Image 1: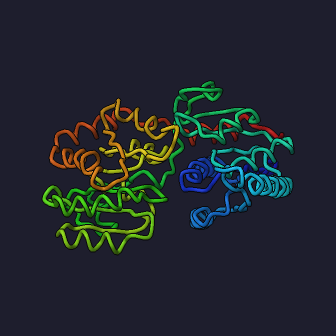
Image 2 (image 1 turned 90 degrees about the horizontal axis):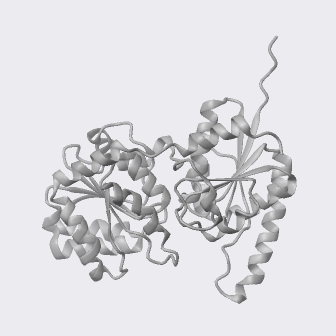
Image 3 (image 1 turned 45 degrees about the horizontal axis):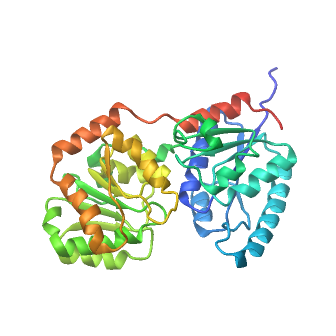
Length: 373
């Protein structure tokens, strides 16, 4: 008789935004594909987006009382209290779950999980997503057993991390053709689609730009339809603006799965977060990438650079003010809306050099090389 399969257990630490959850979900997905005897625990933040995303995927998770790093001295005490409580809770959860390894994907919610795993002797992998690592990853790189990165890292200790490619969920890559994706989400299958998205948290700049652009020159969108993902909160205002301009549009807070949005799109205006850039590349969507303007390290500009260098995207500065953004974001998009040949070339170069599969690389490492801590 053959011996029964032993369940393999793995934990993930990170959260606070969709961008810090979807990489973990992608790796967990590959683990399940390779072994039916895997069990996964997510240690996340207490933000509502974490519970919403993880519950939708049927994931086991525990929300930790972590808080972002303080912006003023008055916040230091609350930050330290939150971190100590979070480490204590993470330690209890990991001791009970007993995973072979923990993967940390960055963000303020990842620190407690990784430090608790180190305390318990559980092996840790730090998965960096951005070309310029965030503060949490720079600190945690000193404590992780090994490090991998979705992209080459420009500076610091994480520059030594093995580059494995971005972790992309299966559900983020279109399996239908453009007409099929459009029909599935209530769009006309025969019309090209402009996708406007600020990722899971939305973009106030893009939400405010579009009504101003429509008032100035809605004719640029003649023959197009728009799928606008707001991130929540401004749907009615935007629906009214598109209707007044006579532009066909579907305005929703979120689109699940995102594969239908990417697959429907003929052109995208998008933030340049690591996950958005990876999914744009995987789906070969010509794009105007709009880096988030409030990051001091400007890491979204670095995220955008490889697609721009390939010729699959252009980058436009977010000047925050809607009128100023007419000259940057709107004009860049208007040029591409009217140049079908350029869009075709952009799609071709992205398809010719697809991104590596970082989720499979890490899942293979976990199942094949990581033993008990």
